[in-house]
Image (cartoon, rainbow, N blue to C red; front, side, top):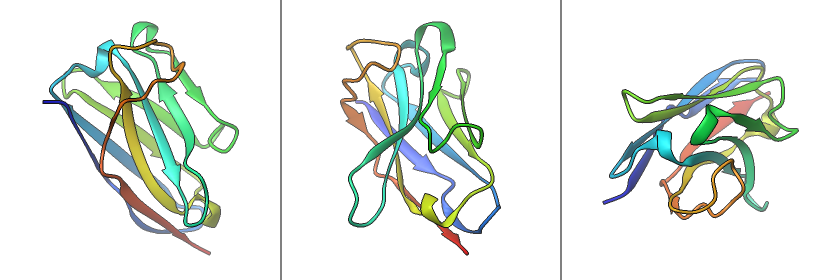
Length: 123
């Protein structure tokens, strides 16, 4: 059974850092694209970062470029999102998702989702 469990969220001051974890079971994270998404109250869900299965290539959207780093630990079957220089506008529920059995290289098709972890950044 495919399962994704996020952790590491919390309350942090502006300029602080958090490291989110996405622990996977039922499949191998190294084989598929894994993305981090977020949804703030009243806003649509947006993709933040993604790491491909093949090639271990990472992609960051403009909101994350230069501040966030996505990485993967194959031995732990876990994907991480290191977030630095956090801003109040980064406040959201953060989700990880996997594109299992579909196109790789973060092209879309994310079909398995975790339950999310809350990140709150105070000014």
